[in-house]
Length: 150
Image (cartoon, rainbow, N blue to C red; front, top):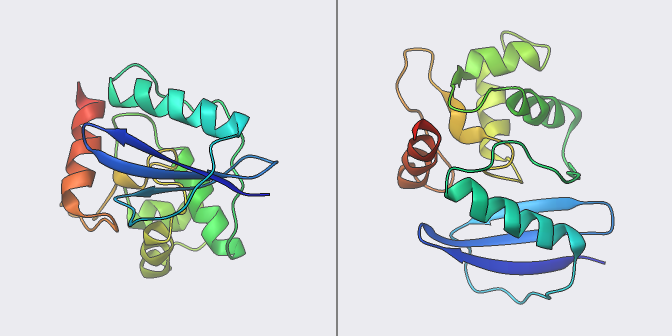
């Protein structure tokens, strides 16, 4: 059974979703959705988010349930290896996922990241050092990078 909860932080609303195995998704700026409150994983994620947004938490302490293609899962796992307050290029992510030439496909997979913030897609930038895109908007990407700088 899936459970959902909306968390409101100073940066905006975040919709978090879990099942019996762990966290399924984290969506920034969600539209109106129905949700339920009970889940140990949602409780853990909500506490983690509050600490993260206050600059006091770096590593997640709950299981993630990744649903996607094998390549997407490899990309998402590669992003989990990007250290806090550091960035990597889409090409680096593609190489970590097993195909150095697939940087555009890696970019697409980064954009499909189902668990934003926890899987740090905000740490992925273009090879030339420019910020690149972000599915929830560049305001969020800059805010997340700023949180990690302080």
